[in-house]
Length: 304
Image (cartoon, rainbow, N blue to C red):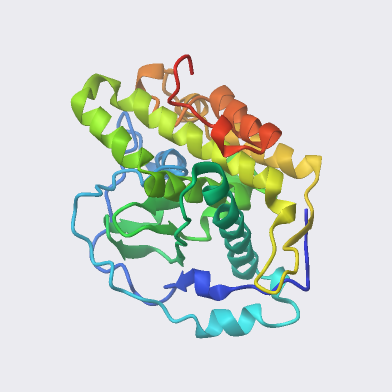
């Protein structure tokens, strides 16, 4: 993967709340399952949260979503010649690429206009429209305020504890969360919640379908990422290799529900899946990438 050094990083698509104390109070308690505590329990909780609306978050709670960060230092850093050597600037550019893709793809594919969303960089804890959260919930999308949240130290845990060391794991994570934003804009997420209320026994199965669709959307972005550009028309990616795509697939495999259950020392129980098995996650990301077509991501269709 190569980023274009001439591409401008648009930091206005990021709300940098790191060091702002934006969270306040207590974060969401993280269940570790089976009474398991310590670092293993924390890792499992974080990974379960990786691609959802936030493990333990309740969109019905009233969080303080009015906090805003100060982007001054981020803007300065990402305007420097060595901007792409910085983790936060690279991630801001990934966000730029993902949103540039959906700005074109959503009206072309679904006939709906894309509404941009910011990604909130936070450290330790944060206040959201879905309630207070801490780093333990991992990256998440909050449909109550239409924002993506991430503590960038999560990538270190992903690499060190799960072995997902490839750089392309990072845009995959962000692209998945923006997949949830697209689902929110299209009404898919709200429709799924209504189905869960009507049929509580199918709640987990419906959650899996939502998560796999977000994986597929991430794959569709990856297929088209080299065609995305900044506001000046400069391409954001100069290349994405087969190795990069394999890194995303490997990451999807490592965060499958069955892999997480095994890592926690629990037996694999498909009835408890909320995000999909390793094989399912690989399958749907790959389908999105191979077709490059978000319409191929109908995980809710008959027979899927």
